[in-house]
Amino acid sequence: MTTPMEVEEDEQHFPVPEWNSDDEPGVKWTQVPPTSSLHNLTDSWTLLPPSAYFPVRQSSYSTLKKKSPSLRPAYTPVMGKMVRHSRKMIHLTSKLNCLKSYISSHPTRRFFITNRILPSTSGYVCVVFVYCRTLKPNVDQNFDRLDDMLHLSTDTWRNGRIKYLATLPTAPFIVKSAVKALGGEKPVIMGKGYLTQRHYTGSNYVEVDVDISSSKVARSIAGTILKRSDVTVIDEGFVIEGVEEVELPERLIGAVRFIHSKVERLASEMGEGDITIEDDDSVISTEDEEEA
Image 1 (cartoon, one colour):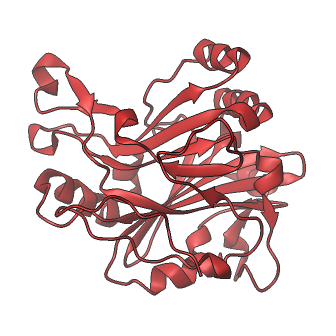
Image 2 (image 1 turned 45 degrees about the vertical axis):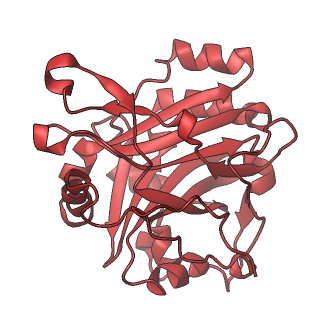
């Protein structure tokens, strides 16, 4: 039995509930300490080190447009997984059995799950990441209010507020040049018509599904990165955009670093005992999208 890599604890954060990777099917995406040297690592991920925390809006943003590095993210990454399927898999929290069991085993904790749906040579790959809230209540009341909205509000609200952040600390010149030509590393609210984004909620989780194939620009960026992902390091994070003064300063929901991770090596076909598809709404076919 293994546990998530220990993170430095302080009075403001709870520990992360144990994830039993022995119950995880398919290829393991290895978690390493954030202090690890990146040069000799492959197919790994880690917590984003504090020195790499993304700049976010501060209290003075409305007048000074000032951004500074975020405080420690409110949610800590627990597990990363790549799942291969012939069609686009949505709401994986309800059907990936190891994930469903983990979430239901910790009913008093809050979770944020991201599901990136990528086109591949044989169908689609879902890049799934699970974050658990570790920030204690009342430490950051501005974030508490926004976090409540994240879990309890409407899809329209989430589409207008969840912002994606990404940088490439290490990447071949051709990758960085392509990303720059297509808009660079600017923060983006993907739900504002840029990509097809769906949200699923349970009593203690929010899942955000993003279909990369729904945008030509996103497909182009993803395709360029994936071809050289084995020599690329990607930092990514999510933040709830603060609009009103009472919603500032912003704080990262969660953040993670992907290290030389090759999709074709990590993506796993799930067996009958690993995944449960209860109805046709669990997947999206090409015909479904044409009718939508």
